[in-house]
Image 1 (cartoon, one colour):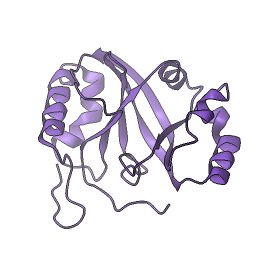
Image 2 (tube, rainbow, N blue to C red):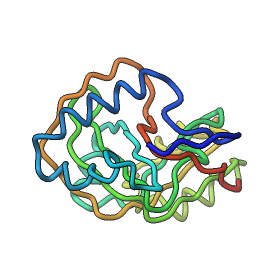
Image 3 (cartoon, one colour):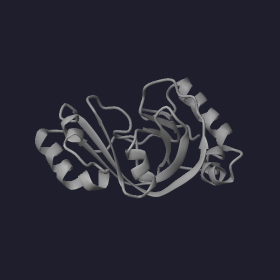
Image 4 (cartoon, rainbow, N blue to C red):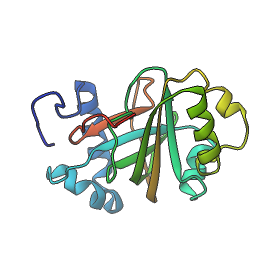
Length: 184
């Protein structure tokens, strides 16, 4: 893990995030496919972040099948991944209440401070790439103040890894360096 001082200190910020990363790394080590992706993090040779993202269905399956090419996270407060995910970062894909099943790489990121007009533009531009098939998705996000949209590439399904995660966060930065917040 790269350590930096100042306003953007290194992740994980919470000790349980560090423990989560170590449990994940230990569980992934026996699998050759996982090892090749994680070795740079073990050797502290990466300038990118490693994120854990929790997915519900049908979005996880759509992503693994290549039908969903952009991931979105909406929130009422400025929280990860807003301003903390960048091109080149790796995202570990975990099923809600289930195992970790794959990973992907970040191709591009858009971070927005939302207005009703901006949400409408996001809906028009990204619905298909998000795998959104009905208006209830957008209705549920009308009260959001922030949005992070992440174009992904290199989606890889990998051997399932059980990982106990006991909090309700849908996104955790497991290791790497932080980056300054993105421009809204």
